[in-house]
Image 1 (cartoon, rainbow, N blue to C red):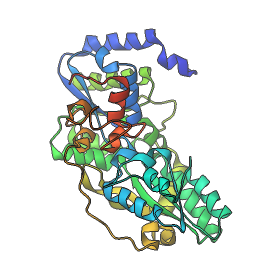
Image 2: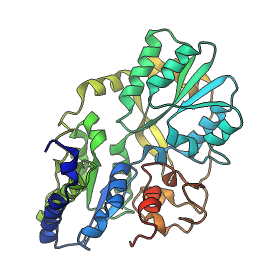
Image 3: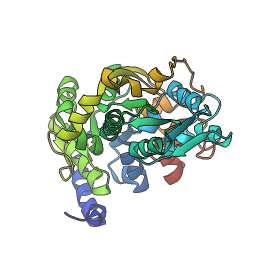
Length: 364
């Protein structure tokens, strides 16, 4: 297959669905990790096309959604400085903090700019040598190499007016945390294809062996997803627990070696707080000692603040696969995309936003 349309071909998708129906004899719960996968599942109604014995759970696969509330508050404090140009991806502007979001800060007259990459922020810093420019660096392993390159370029060119609020998170530790908690019954995973494009698949072997659970690296189109489910169910029905790669057109076993080298050069692994979940050990990336001058938290001597989630918001349970979005009493009522209580209703990859956009009422 060479064209995107082939991965949306209804006949091909139905053929795989028929295969899934033929081999499914037991009840299985499979968690897709990536929010992009969640949106595709909801958009194309894939859950309803699968056997009743198969339930898809939505995991912590949206970097906007898992950025902690205390990190959002730090971003708001940094952006509320008249000497700062604060740069962020668009999705982050509407993520609610304790009392307001970054878009509200922008409306108050502070200089907050939406950018599409860390390189955009770096260029803004070059163009404004007398202003401090801060980039809000969020994302999984997918976006980390570009951030590493931007920080390295800033250091090499001797820039002193550029820094980053780093909030990068790592997928495998989150999978470990969810499985080790024992709270959610998860029989298999559809791993995030874009993350594995960078990192490869080696890290997942340890998880599959430790928890005796199949993990299938999967793409984002309907055919990708149903094939991923088929591979996973086939393993489960056979009693196997292996790592399989459905996303062969993008993911190599070793990942992108050069990208991983840049990450190792610039970052160190740190504990990270995940929104709605709490601190997961060794689940984040922070700038290492050589690049510490570009860490906004260090540069501005910022302290941590324990900020509580709204009690009515169950986004943490949704991100762990414990509940579906429409189980939240606020869903579609006091929590909507126009007036969100949690990040899962804001982000273009958030599970609540997917349910609201594609199916307000979802059984399960």
